[in-house]
Image (cartoon, rainbow, N blue to C red):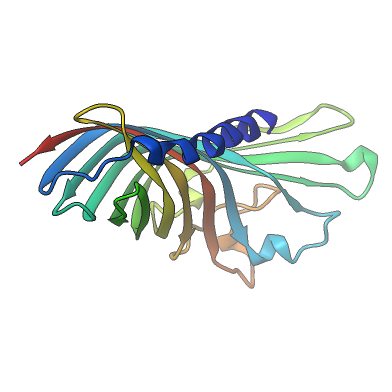
Amino acid sequence: MKKHLLIALTVISSIPALPAFAQPRSSGSFNVGPIATARSTWFLNKNTSDADETEQAYEPSFGYGYGVNLGSYFNDNFGIELDIFMASYMQKYKGGASYTLQYHSKTAVKAVDLPLVAVVKANSGSYFEIGGMYSLVNKANFTMSFDSTKITLHDNTNVKTSFNKNNISAVIGFGMEGNLGDQLLLTAGFRFTFGLSDFQGVDALGIPYSKYTDAYTTHTATGGIHLALKYMIEY
């Protein structure tokens, strides 16, 4: 967690410096380049959040993503961008009414994220983005162990079938973009997503939510830093 905080503080401190070398983007341009994100990730389900904390409770969790950014700008201030991410999501849990029953568990999901956003950019370099994201689940594993006995009840148990194969999310973000050279751009900002569809999945004990009598929907939520290095080609 300290590592993620250090990364976030580094990005935040660098953002004010970007306008010093930010230049208007040429009208009619295409950009491509590597992109990465480090973020807090959550699988929000009322069955877990309403449960007694001695049974199951959320813990802060983190994931990451890396891939390729593709963008097309129609003028200096407006464009469309598509990211192709290899992304990881994680949700950690804890519970147990007594020391001997205390446990920690986590669900780890690998997915391909495809966020498509409209970007509005000021001449100063600041930008705002909004759009949607389609996610395709590749892998989902569940791990659970008891603290006192060190017994592992589940060790990367495959729970992919308990998740929806895809997920639709809303996306919003903001930050700064600056020129590192005539055709090289650096983007540093923050992006947040919230799942609009039911991601399903399992609870802190590894029980599929679909087996609950009164099952609620699972919504993903993420928020974190967003970095991209883009090569711009005018057209």
